[in-house]
Structure formats: structure tokens, C-alpha cells
Image (cartoon, rainbow, N blue to C red; front, top):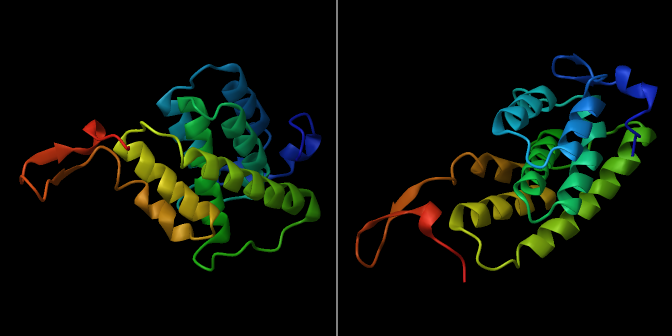
Length: 179
């Protein structure tokens, strides 16, 4: 994993230019109990703009997986894992395979994928989770299983409703819980 103090970040790029500011944003995640949704949106837009990622995005991926692992049962951990899944989805693309990348980026990236797979596997068995969160974890699990298209599900499965087939009542999915 590229250390946050490593000067190579200035040579890495994201969708808007130099990756020099990414370590500070990662430090912000680490030092903040629950970063604001606007922060996550802006960071996600920087690292994954219009289905593209840069070398700084790939270098940030292992840090996000680590943060998700360390904060697994919190909103911060979930947000970090979700952003990591977005980076992974856009990196492997519709071919669902890891592209060639320099060893300094590739080895930590592959290791973080394995760690992310283990984390997602453990999250799948948490009981008493609301329906939208469960569906997001399933979509994230799909991405970490090299099915990039599963990421497209994330925008369509939160805060929705459906008509109950038994009673035809409209049910808000944020009221549903697993098990």
C-alpha cells in the first residue's frame, strides 16, 4: 500500500488532476467519526468521475478497504466500502478483469480486493440489517466477485418501495429488516 506520506501521490492522477490531495482526504476520513455525506459525494466524484478512475483512485482503494475493515459496523466503514466498490467496478470495467498496472499499485490493489472479499463475506451474515443496506451489501459483494455491473444496482435499491404480493400494500423498503 502506498503510504500517505509518500511523495508519489503528487505523480498519481484522478479525474481532475494531481492526486497530491488524496492523502489529506484519507486522513480526514480516519480522523472524523462520521464524515458528512457531501464529503463522500465529493471524494467519490474525484476518484470515480463518469465511470473513470486514475492511478490515485487505485492507490486510494487499499486505504478505503482498510478503513472499511477497521470501522465495519459504522456508517463510515460502510461508506468507505461502498466507495471502494465503486473504484473496483470502474477499474475492472465491463471486462471484469484487473487491467495492467505498475507493481507498486497492482500488488496492494489485489491484496485489498482479497481483504474486501473477506470483509463483505462477514457482513453478509449480520442479522437485523434493514433491507436497503442488505441490498447494497449484495451489490458490493457482486463487485468484489468481479461482476462490475452489480455496482449499477446501488443507485436503484435504496429508499424505494414495492407492492406486497400478499396484501398489495405499498411497503417502504427502509422499514424492512432481514431475519
